[in-house]
Amino acid sequence: MSAIKVAAKIQPAKQALIFFHGLGDSGSGFSFLAEILQRDPAFSHTKFIFPNAPEIPITVNGGQEMPGWFDILDWNLGSNNVDRIRFSASLKGLENYVQEEINDGIEPANIVVGGFSQGASLTLAASVSLPIKIGGFVALSGFCFNEKFLNEVKNTNNLQTPVFHGHGTADQVVPYQIAELSRDYFKSNCNMNDYKFQTYNGLQHSTCPEEMKDLVVFLKGALNVQDI
Image (cartoon, helix red, strand yellow):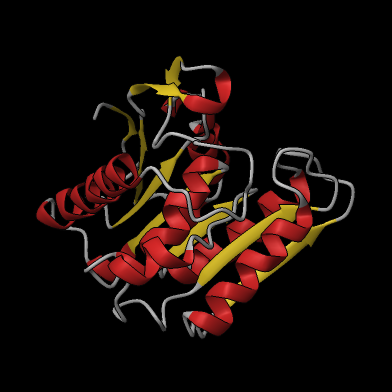
């Protein structure tokens, strides 16, 4: 997979944020996060990686090809009908990105993985399946509670790892109630002990300044950076 990469303002890099975009988007679509965070001196040593999904046919869109981490087989968001092959491949790709940062000298505890929409689904699955304990996970406007699939891949490496899950009450793509079910699944069925679910009233399938402020606070803790 290719990726948009933004170097740390001050070298050497000591932290890394790896962020996965949503369906039909690209890594550049969320590279604005680097611009926002690099305004804060606390993130001067943080590097940013925004992977690009491959072009794949999407079943619910009539087989039209677009960037995606996995196929969407039907619009039943609670279905266990999962594109296992591509989902598993994307999880392996996520793991490879994490390992690449570790190989470059970043401590695992100073790495956060995040995503928006379909990228958030991938991130949430990684929170219970990634074989490496990292600093944190960020899921924006997404969900994931494909129990049968997750039961096959999950482990206990990140049960204590903090998760930030932000979702808007007016989301027309992933309804708020679906996000709540996802939260309940990870907290109850997966025993995630540090799962922060943040609600944004009136927010649709997007981000907002309030969510960005909350994200900055979360990332400072998860990436072990200090205010300067």
